[in-house]
Amino acid sequence: MIPRYSRKQMADIWSPETRFKIWFEIEAHAADRMAEMGTIPKEAAAKIWEKGRGAQFDVARIDEIEAVTKHDVIAFLTHLSEIVGPEARFVHQGMTSSDVLDTCFNIQLTRAADLLIADINELLAALKKRALEHKYSVCIGRSHGIHAEPVTFGLKMAFAYAEFMRARERLMIARKDVATCAISGAVGTFANIDPSVEEHVAAKLGLSVEPVSTQVIPRDRHAMFFAVLGVVASSIERLATEIRHLQRTEVLEVEEYFSPGQKGSSAMPHKRNPVLTENLTGLARLVRSAVTPAMENVALWHERDISHSSVERGIGPDATVHLDFALKRLAGVIDKLLVYPENMQKNLDRLGGLIHSQRILLALTQKGMSREDSYSAVQRNAMPVWRGEGNFLDLLKADKEVSAVMKPSELEALFDLGYHTKHVDTIFNRVFV
Image 1 (cartoon, rainbow, N blue to C red):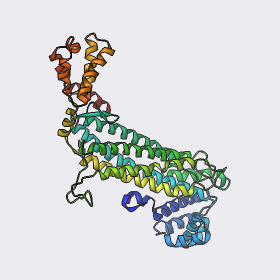
Image 2: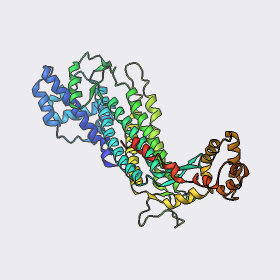
Image 3: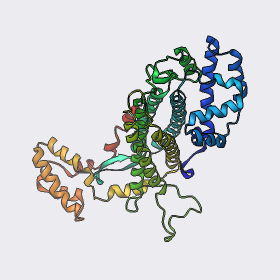
Image 4: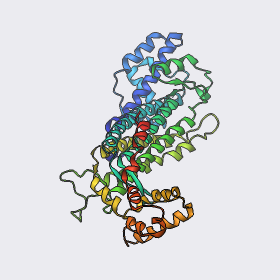
């Protein structure tokens, strides 16, 4: 995790202090159930909670022990015994390291998902506000980067809103999928621990019981989780790329907010660059880089190996921290985005009316011309305009074949921008239900 791209609330989920606190809670809840069953003394379970609940686990001390043991869970349990005392011998009865590690990892991922869902809610609010604000701000739609037909900037925002609604739904599903608990012991058979211990711990920590866990929680769950993060990141990049294109000098239909005192270039004082959305594009790449390793973690040897462990120690914090930062940044970009309707109109007018070519084509077919002849008539008048030679409407009026079937007033009526916005309400009603 790079502090530059980290927000405290998300970064704290992945801190050693948080991890050891969760480990303790898993062990203590398990001890409670074992005490209820008579497997360990009730006094021991009470002492474990009494000594450990408010303890400040010494990260440096745990690291010192691990340097000798070469085992992180054993190092933690050794330090816990220093805090709890003799009753610590009843901790971890019948459990294996993966019971603690996997359950903890899933708790961290669910907490991260909760923050990400809240981030998306904030982004959705910003998108909805701007969509409604610019519902009828007409701008040119582009295909292949080339002027096509009119749309509205509000529709662009509505498109993004619908996309991030899907992102939220996917995250909620991914959260549910990964929110499982495994306390099943070595190779997952419950040979040395009762299944009710797992049920108790899961209930206390807000998780579901993993139906069958071998010695690890199945990694297809995690592959699903990180795949969803990757898709959300791609949606961020799609919107960021749109804004970057629209901010180009030759377009300048929107622009990132440029704050007082902000500098765009160390060499050129005039520059106002789309640095935030460029940054979002890069962060999206980082988040997606976690997807393939998460997929490859699914195939572990037999009941357990640790080839997944080093991967998850990296991608868990990095992907969630980067996505959290990116979603928050994108919400800010949208909320403060500068929108220039006058430039949108200039761009609409750049091709001398060619953006209405399809409507002319269709009108000619309605007047009795074949589609092939209509297309040829429209195209032969469009190409000079494309080269900067004349005005499309004037050329159509002067075309003998076109004027034979259409009056000048009929042609003029076909150049109405309002024609392209007549179903905006229908689309908005579908999106903003």
